Amino acid sequence: MPTYVYECQSCRHVFEVVQSMSDAPIEVCTKCGKKVKRIIPNGSVGIIFKGSGFYCKDNPRSGCCGGCDKH
Ligand SMILES: [Zn+2]
Image 1 (cartoon, protein in one colour):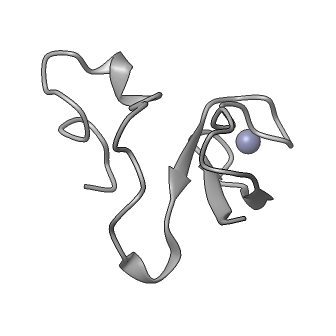
Image 2 (tube, helix red, strand yellow; image 1 turned 180 degrees about the horizontal axis):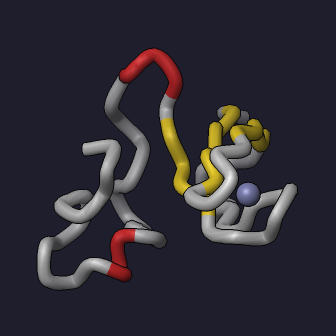
Image 3 (cartoon, protein in one colour; image 1 turned 90 degrees about the vertical axis):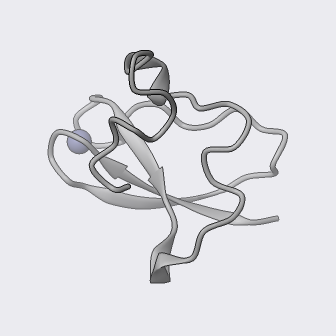
C-alpha cells in the first residue's frame, strides 16, 4: 500500500498516511482540522491529483492544479 504525504494548508503540519489508492483522500489536518493537500516527497509526479482533484475543486476557473501553490 502506498504512503501518501499530506501537508496542512493552515499550520503546515506534514503527516503520512498509508492507504490504498481506492481509499478516499484525507481532507483535514490531524492537528488543527483545517484543509490539507496531498503532496509527493522528492518532487516526483505521478499518481497525485489525477482522478479526484479533491482540493482543486475550489478553483474551478483555473482548473485542477492551476490554483495550487505547489504547481
Ligand atoms: Zn493543520
